[in-house]
Image 1 (cartoon, rainbow, N blue to C red):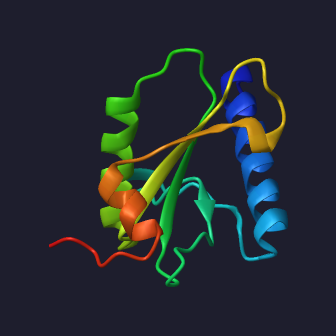
Image 2: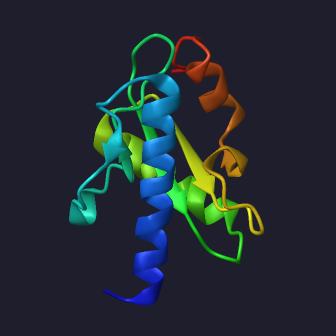
Length: 118
């Protein structure tokens, strides 16, 4: 496995373990790779109303939010999920709770319980 892939895997594990522990939900875990129909990196995350949340995890020094949000949009369709987030490495901060989350405002509203916009 390449060093870059190992870095990403470690970040995914950090995020999955943190969310599973913090939310008390052992269904939250790293998602196996699914090829062209990617559904995100972390499985089992739900909105306050129980809807699926696509979680894409990034560990890179170069921030590319537009590309990452487009990736999440495609993954939402693949997973039939109403919202998605990008969790990206906050450099200089190793603790899971210190990582950053980026999403569209509409996804944030859905996460908090709003109806999915049509």
